[in-house]
Image (cartoon, rainbow, N blue to C red; front, side):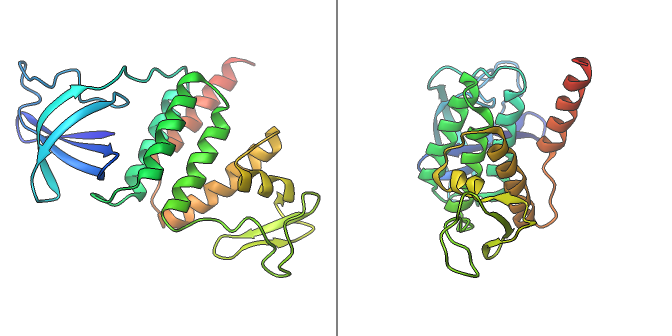
Amino acid sequence: MHHQNYQESSIIVDVFTQAEGRVSLLAKGFRQQKSHYLGLLRPFLPLKLDYKGAQSLKILQHVESGNQAYDFPELNLYCAYYINELIRSFLPESEPYPDVFLAYLNCLQALQNNEATEAALRCFEIQLMDALGYGLQLEFDVNSGDEIQPELRYHFDIEQGPKADNNGELKGSSLIAMQQENFTNPEQLQQAKQLMRSVIDFYLQGKTLRTRSIMSKLISQKTCKTH
């Protein structure tokens, strides 16, 4: 998911594994011209890895390609980097999150196929927050205890949940769509995007996501060129 140079010829890579979650690996000699790892240690290429070590930084011993690299159309590449950044920002190292790993693969597949990109991103964000214990209460009005009604409007308190409010920023139908992870119109997706951005920013506690600002600039540039 990410790499940084280490000393003269090595790098440290951050990988996401099914069995152990996020793992930091030291790839010795990677930057040497004859390195066995050349062309393999890059984002969005499934790998088979062998590594050892009891410390947080483990030593990469062997790597080979597992499947073909994901190939993303247009802006979807930056969407894929965005979910990588979410994982690196939220998941602790060396703790397995098999549900997040599966959600990650499903999201990458949707991004590659250009299928319901916005819905795929929102579903991944919801599933990530849920796996971390930050799951949203989307079923009931926290004041009345009533089930969410699609025709009503709600204000969403991140730490408590939705509250019926005639001036609320969210429609009940959008909250139900998020609960069911089944979006049927652009308004639901837009409201879900705004809510999930607020939720993610709340738990990032002031940390900014670099990929989010990059995507905003690219989308702005693309919009300008089409007018």
